[in-house]
Structure formats: C-alpha cells, structure tokens
Image (cartoon, rainbow, N blue to C red; front, side, top):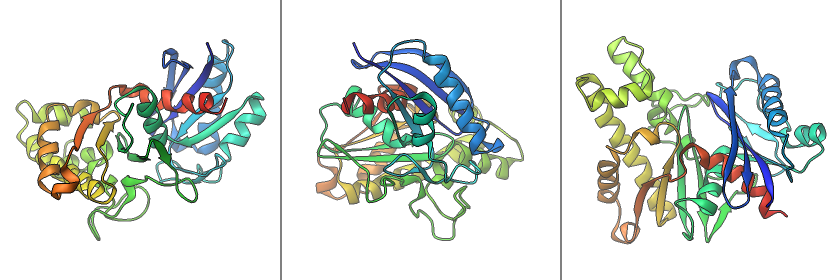
Amino acid sequence: MKKAIGIDIGGTKIRGGVIREDGKLLSVREMPTEAKRGGKEVMERVAQLIQQLSKEEIIGIGVGATGQVGLQGEILSATETFPDWAGIHLQKELHERFQLPVRVINDGQAMALGELSFGAGKDVQDFLCLALGTGVGGAIVSQGKLVRGTNGAAGEVGHMLFHPAGRRCPCGKSGCLEAYVSGHALEARYLERNGVKKAGLDIIRGAQECDQAARILMEEYVDDLAMGIASLVTVLNPRKVILGGGVAQSLPFYLPSVEEKVVGRLSYAAALDFTLVLSTLGDGAMLLGAGSVLFDSQ
C-alpha cells in the first residue's frame, strides 16, 4: 500500500507523519516551530522532521503550511508571527533537497482535504473548514473539490473583515476574524481585562468551572465565532461547517450554543440542511490532507 509523508506547519509546532493511502496515520513526530527565529529556520526544522520520517518507502511529501501558499507551493504572504516566511519557495526547496515529489498547500486547505477524504467531509459536496488554533485558517470545498482561487489563497477566512477598525491582527491589519476567535486572541483579551496571563485552553476550561471572568469572555467568544460563521454560510451556502484545530477540540461544550446562534442569523434557505460539527480527525486532519495530495496525483 502506498505511503507518503504529511507535514503540518503550525504556529506552535510542526507535526509530521507517514500517511497510508487508506487514511492510516503512522509514525507521528513533532517539534516546536520556533517561528520567531525566521523562515529559513522553520524550513530547516521541516527538513529535519522529513529526514526522521524518511526511513519508510514513500511516494512523496505533502505539506500543509501556515500563510498564503501559491499554486506552485511558494509562500506568498504570512503574518508577523512568521517573520521572513513569505517568499520561501518551500515546494521547490524540499524537492531539490529530497529528490521526491513535493506538494505544498495552505494548512487550512490541507485540513479540508483530510476531512474530504477521511473525515466529516466525506461524501459531502459542499462544506467549509475553520481551523481554530494559534491563528484562524479556513478552506472551501465546492462540488467535492477544494477551491484554491486565482493565486491559491482562497478560503483565508481568518483575515476577512469582522469589525472595522477593530482589534489589531497579526497580519498587520485591524478587525480580522482571527483577532477575535484565535487562541492567541482569547489569551490577549483575558490578559487585557484581568492582568493575568492564561493559556487559551485553560480559559475555556475555567469558563466551565468557577472563573467568572473566563465565563464572560467565552460568552463573547461564542457570539463572535457564531457571527463569523453565519456570515460565511450566508455567502457560501455549505451543507457543513467543520471546526478543527487545537482550540476547536476544546469547544464541545459550546458547540450547541454556537450552532443555535449561527442558525438564528441565517435565512431559511441558508439554514436548510446546515450542520456545524467538530473535526472527526482531530489534529490528524492536516497531516492526512497534506499526504492525500500525493495519492491524488499518482
């Protein structure tokens, strides 16, 4: 059975695994991203991870990378959390180094392909993915195909305008959805209000226990998330929205409330047959999606 390497380059960590074409995830490894050390350092870490995973016979390497990725696998742009990442031709450099077929796409798009092939998007023609983690990524699947757009950057829902002149986003603009519903945004808002630094997942847990400040913030977070999703559903009319990423995995308690608020903002037609679900693949979605690109091209 064919195998490929899948790589997920996130804001906090880089994960890699050997992917079997039936969706079995093997030999998973990870290391810190250390993005502040610059794009070349991140690329070297990716190469190290690939080297560690290359002991098995593989047909190629698939990468889901943070930032906007061009149709030839080059990094078109990135937020300030990834300095010197834009301009790196990741696909070309990895191909030259390992002499294997390499495909590089955006990490949110990799998540969508993973869900389409093996997860909650299987047999669903039209759906939208939102990756809620350190940042916010996204991807659109229409008629069973990933929508990449003119330059490969379609689906960047984290940077759609959410609040004009609102909170500053790591992309350098203000009012993006990412500035309100990412893990980083949740932590920043808690610190601003309470003078206490707390991890996003601890804030979510605290809101379900005895932290009143966290509870108030999570009520606002749910409203913001629902508003963003409702806007996307109104425009794109998907059957499903699939939430993935580290933050989303901590949201099962809030999911019914988010879905109710989304549906309450939709027209009858947009709400018809619509469902909001969590990824069934968890943090494996992006690895599986990145690897699946190689199988599709064989």
